[in-house]
Image (cartoon, rainbow, N blue to C red; front, side):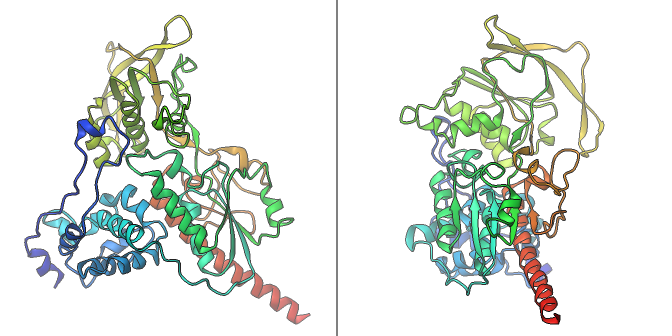
Length: 481
């Protein structure tokens, strides 16, 4: 049946309208405009309503994709948003930043003949429609279980876990070290990709579910995990602190003025609102010639932010070819459109001092691709004698992150691997310490928003199971006495 449907020539995908590249490169407004109701229904009508839908298997939080798309076809947009929220508390975020092209959309049967259904665009549409037209309805609170859970870190993993736990009837407190909840959603992803008002609305929805969100609360300093589990009366703890400690290039001159880690640069631009100058006079160097090092989404974000902050030239330096870039294809495409210069098969050797402690140039070497390395990608090999210099006044390494030890070094009995990540079961988040669970980047290393959310959901289910078995065993023992 599905094969016959797949044989039908699919209609063209409804393209989402966007700001023109030259205009958007000078502002921080969101790049895509989103679907109109008519566009959403037209795109939803492309769905074949497969009897055995494969798209749902590609979603890390298991959204019932066919059901919410069917509701869009019928014009029942609010109900479509509610259907998504059965499995995902933050659809407006996921509709914007999830890599649907390698997840749910990659399994859409229409992709065999043409373009898959634009699942992410449709998810974004219904989330925005609900927020703009009906408010965000909060489901009825379940009966309290009497159990308390502390969630450490308010990024996507922590928010997702907290939302599921509160729906299970537990008392949930979410602790955030910074002054705004949202984690990487507020400090890392730029306004033009994810407007902060969207994040605030999604966090507010989770607050309205009943989660107590406490900001400026650095666990490890305010309380240790052991104190949460004893003195503060929490029955379990979920650690979702991410991997926010930057990795540098490790080349000479990296301590010169004008060199930012991508984390610091994006935090100053986003969370500290440098993009709203002069309303916010956040200290940040607005370079004329900026070099960003890396090929992931963070590198694309940093390059596009630097351009919008007034740089005359932004070059993105990456040691492999564009085919090996881990960034989303849409972000690479947008960067090209906006005028970011890609310097591929290029590797930095050292930063050059202007004689006053400031960066003035970077010396690079050309690379060529050799045999595949452990990542499966062809290993870049230096081309002898190909060194050259690029004049720059700001450099932004965006080559990855690692876990911050502020929390983990104060948790006795918590097993870490040699790189400092928490050792935890992938399916449950259970760690070596009883009652302590972990998930997201703090166990996997840097990954995507939706994978962290999936980890949060799995941990919430595991915590529910832990409570059932722990307190059932305790009650049984007490009864036998």
